[in-house]
Structure formats: structure tokens, C-alpha cells
Length: 130
Length: 71
Image (cartoon, rainbow over all chains, first blue to last red; front, side, top):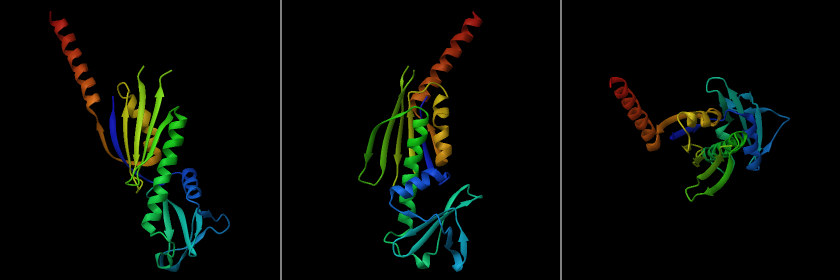
């Protein structure tokens, strides 16, 4: 049987998220896990980043959505990427890391990887039955 | 046994399209459950033509068995 699925990626696991942030070259701040967020209030976060332009960003676990959500003060956003592009890039790499690690656990091998012109990443993985 | 193939297209915004080939019966759902759970929320899931054919064949077999009982 075969199927086709469309999946909306949520940042559910810390490990592939940290991996994605590292791959994008962002520096994780393990000392100060606070970000000035909504209405200037300081919010405790699980992962804290110092982006260039003195922009502070954090990811905080959210029980309702069962995923990590971005915390930042948009008024102070001074990073060279708009916030939507930032979160898209992180989410795309998070999805990539999750797919690679989960399929490896299940014995699949990556046989093809293509970066398409539309910015998408295509992967083909195979496994032969033993 | 057939080669099992997983194909993914990870869009720029992180949405993922997945297609799965070479599985028997419901195995294909088991094969990708871990990945789908880890990624997030499945919005659309369709069985593809191959799945439809194997289902039809099953129906044909059932009919044959029934007629054997009748005779």
C-alpha cells in the first residue's frame, strides 16, 4: 500500500531544534534564558539566542500547542531576516533533521537530496527488506 | 521483497509532503507513523492508486471465495 501525506511541521523536539539553530550559525545563550517579549515583560525560555543586531530570541515550550514557540519583542527586531523568514528557515531545517534521524533509526538510507529552485529540499530514502 | 521508498519534499516554510511506496497492506502507515508524530500534524492523507489496486484485488478474491461456497 502507498500513501501521500501533507504535514504541518511543529517544533516538538528540543534536539533537532538546537541542531537546526547550530546549522544556521546562531549562537545559543546557555547562561541567560530570559527574553524580553510581549509588552516588555521578561519571559523565561527553554532556548535563548543572541542574533546580530542585538536581537534576542527564545523558544519556549507551550503546553497547549505541544511544541516550542518563538518568543521575541518584535519592536526590537533588528536582525537582517524578517521574523517570518527566520522561523521558516528554522522550521525547514528542523523538519530535515527530524526526517533524517527518524528514518536512520528505522534503517533507511538517504539516496538522493536535491535543493530545488523554489527553496524546497527533496529527499529520497530507501530500505530493502532483510 | 520490494524496495521500500520514502520521498519527502520539505518546503521553505517547513511544511512537508511525504509519499511512500513499496509497502504491503497497512505497513506503510506504520512505517511513517514515527516520522509524522515527530514532525507535527498530518493535514492531508491519501491512499495512492497502488493502494486502490491492492484493495480491489482483495475484493475480487472475496467474491471468488463466496462463489466457491455456493457451488
